Length: 357
Image (tube, rainbow, N blue to C red):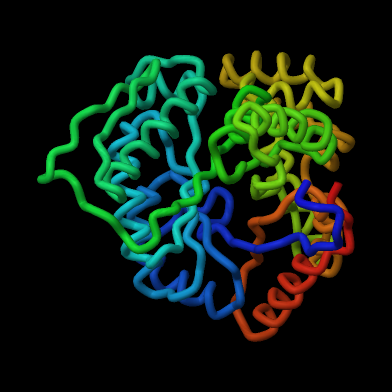
């Protein structure tokens, strides 16, 4: 994907939250400082229970080198101009460390959580990105704001609302994608792709890579310019007994994604489309406890990476080392031994011997 030379898996970021664990926004500054001291390349925060831009603003105050990524922030509930301003402010405050990861969200959440009309996400995302870039060009180069798209039409920027140029105006834009239309948008207008956790290596290679390449060709770009980033579904623990308990929790997470029709394509490539339909029917009936039983061992080990601390890094490299540039990975750190173990894992994740296709 990047080249035909030997390269490591790439940069490693943690999330600031373990799955299903509430995040206390008051600890982010201290947590970010610890993450930097542990040798991570960046941090990635999701839009779940706290605003991602505020989280990263706090993280920027206690760090100097960490990349700061939204992974991801919701695009459509905010106007392109609002997102442009949030990113511009954070890029200025962090002296150029922002990676702006954006996602579209599924139909039900757009309509029922955000109270907005839903439209086809891929063409809207393309228009959104182009509108946001027009705002940035206006601010950086003092050119008139002019964007006339199918979804967004912008032509007003008065001096009172123009923050002016900044030292690091090139903000990388990553888009969360799983289906081919959005992958093509990534190739055409974005700098990186944020892969959904259910994307298996087979799905990435056979479906996503060709779609991104098609999009890049539309704009006469090289597909190798795109950064591939992922927070895989990982079940890991110190020992096998503890791992069994962790694995069941991750199996339930696979079941949750299985019940989401928007992710059906990633399961269909493995001939599991019928199970998506079954899981979706159970979710509509609120029979959530029955869904994990649909996730048999073959599906579980295809979608999730499972292993003890001793072998999880090598397993991740074997699975994704030739496919992605940036991985989100973490384990709990409670003492110096944990810290040493984590550092060795990070080193191994950066030294994959895989050849990128």
